[in-house]
Structure formats: C-alpha cells, structure tokens
Image 1 (cartoon, rainbow, N blue to C red):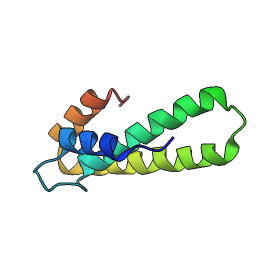
Image 2: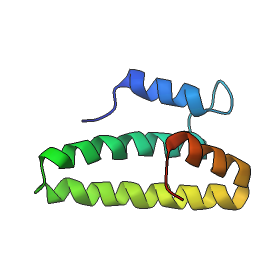
Image 3: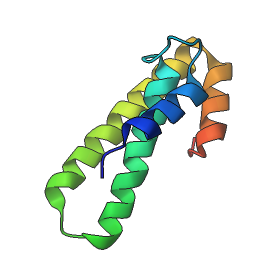
Image 4: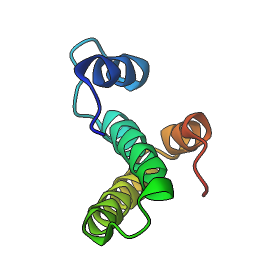
Length: 89
C-alpha cells in the first residue's frame, strides 16, 4: 500500500535539513525505505506477485545509489541515516 500524505510529511519532518527541504538525499532515502518496508510486508502475503517484486528491486537499487552518493559526499550523515533507519551496511 502506498504511503499516505501524513506518513510522507512525518518522514520528511524527521529527516529534512531545513523547513523547506523535501528532496535531499536523506529524505529520499527515508521515503524509499518506508516504501520498501511496506512492499516487504506485502510479499509475505502475496509470494507470487512478481510484477511488484520488480518494482521493489528498482526501489532497492535506487536507494543503494543514493546511499553511495551520500557516503561519498558526507560520511557522517551516511552513518547517521543508516543507524536511524536500521539498514545493513
């Protein structure tokens, strides 16, 4: 199930750099993580949904690219966001 507008706003408020920040790497990574977690729960019930699984793989790879970018540019923020979101390194 897609994220509601309130869920998106809560995630943005938690990870944004300033009050107008909606597209920084940290916010995007957090939003991707929420969507990935929702899809993971979906696949526990619907194991044969291969079309959505392809979308999940795209989300995971996009998040990985953003994490690599963040690690290259600001390692301290990378470490903090990995810790906050409970991601494996």
